[in-house]
Image (cartoon, rainbow, N blue to C red; front, side, top):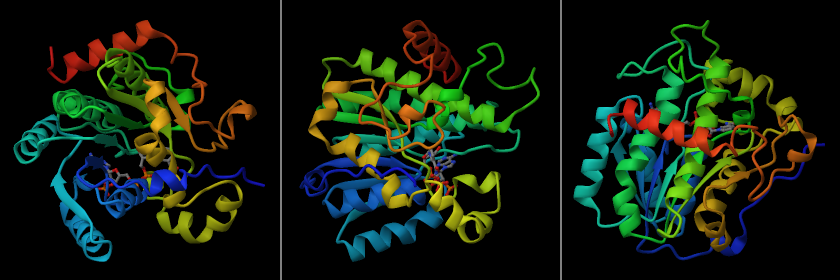
Length: 313
Ligand SMILES: NC(=O)c1ccc[n+]([C@@H]2O[C@H](COP(=O)([O-])OP(=O)(O)OC[C@H]3O[C@@H](n4cnc5c(N)ncnc54)[C@H](OP(=O)(O)O)[C@@H]3O)[C@@H](O)[C@H]2O)c1
């Protein structure tokens, strides 16, 4: 039987978030949409940072009408550093504060390709785009402290093994899953490094695994109709959870008072794919199973390399 899903506490889901502002990337589907809906239900202003604004707008309209929410769509393509910069400029022009940045958007097992700036797609979209976004939003997050940055990683970061000599997969035969694992390791390493940098700033940075969630993420691996109709009963028995269940760890990390004591930590929903069975029930927080995550020199190296690649140095 699949292990029990971890749920954010009722107290956290009942908090009045009036006056607070959150950015959720990839808010138009899956986990990000459920996080957005919940934050809006709790009366927060939510910026839905999406690349497909036409798909996102009707969802924002529905949230605002049905739940009397305050969701607003803003364009953000994480595969374009120019788009990230434009987003931050537009956000800063229209807002005075930011209580939480949820770096939720991601892609998995994409065909070999590059972002607008020439980076391997998954390293670019899953790590470098959110890296630049986080760094550019740090001033407003610090000014709004207490505030939080959430990095949606994956249980798969356990398999990550960054090749700093070939981050763009030009010298190796491309492996779409390994590139995903590497990008998700980068998120955990960066969240930890950021947590250390931000100690005593009032900004809390954490990473998380949302669970194995029925969403559009598998679209490059199998047709979604196969996942959602043919295979779903079996996948559910194997531990696949709904987007609402998948939103719980993010909501916990954003809303629980205890999280601030764990700057840089990794939080996990149940994870049937952990190699070590003891890790499968997850934990809030839990020790990362990756042998690389405790390596602070590696975190510092990733920060330096990423900063240079996105033009921050
Ligand atoms: N589902 C799982 O089992 C699972 C497990 C572990 C971790 N995760 C992580 O959880 C996060 C949410 O995924 P999900 O499961 O909710 O999948 P999803 O339904 O596919 O949602 C991913 C979101 O990211 C957006 N996105 C993709 N590329 C983007 C870009 N270049 N710029 C801006 N937004 C972009 C997508 O926008 P479009 O609609 O325009 O494509 C979509 O809104 C991801 O980071 C994923 O890696 C998921």
